Each structure stands twice: as C-alpha cells, then as structure tokens.
Image (cartoon, rainbow, N blue to C red):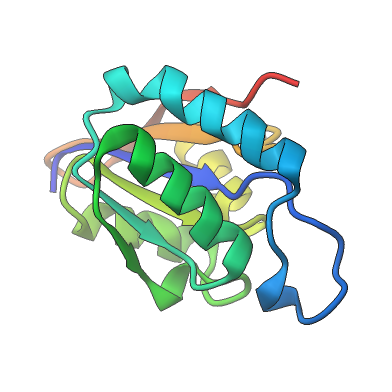
Length: 148
C-alpha cells in the first residue's frame, strides 16, 4: 500500500530487574519521548499505532497515541526477536498509510538501514518516516530522535 508509515524504537527503558518483557520506560525516557511525540504529532497524520507487546514498547506507543489521538493495537511481530528488519518492512507494506510500528532494536535499526541504503544510528525514541511507493519500494524520508 502506497503512503507513509513510521518505525518507532521504544524510548529509554529501565534496566532489567524482572523479566525483559516487563521492563518499563525510565521517567526521563518517558518525559523525552512524550515531548518528542507532541512535537512530531502535527506533521505525522497518524491513523493507528501498532506495538510490540513488551511493556517499554506499549508505554511508548501509548504516549504516541495520546499525542496523535490514534488507537493502539498490539502486533506480536513487533516483539523483540520476533522478526527481522526485512520482515518489518514487509509489515510496513501491508499496513495502512499513517500507521506507526513501535518495536525494538536491532530489528528497527535493520529496517531503517534497509530503507536508507546505509547504516544509521537509531537511538531510543527515534521515529523514522518511510515512504512506500505504489510498487512497494521503500525509502527513508527522515529519522528524528528525541532531544537529550
């Protein structure tokens, strides 16, 4: 489907104290990403947010959804280790334009690198805009990370 889709790496997460799946965002990571999402919201035109079921991604998705008034659904393929970067790009081709996919590195960084044609740093909370052409070709339009 042609249009713009977004890849989002979850914001800064707390160190592992229980299971990896239960790691929440740090207070600073939450604050930085909330400001980042609010700043980007007017230009995104989001219609939906799909998220990894892991806590840190769900929290990031909730902040993005609140800033854009978009619904959130879980997508198991976005869980850490569940897909490759190539599989995430295939998912991006299948979703509706205006969808954000919230997940984890290394998968998000791998998908961004494939779209950009080169390796790029994808820090916590980064949002990458992907342009999807009618023929399915994907190109990176931009990559923006939260301010420190």
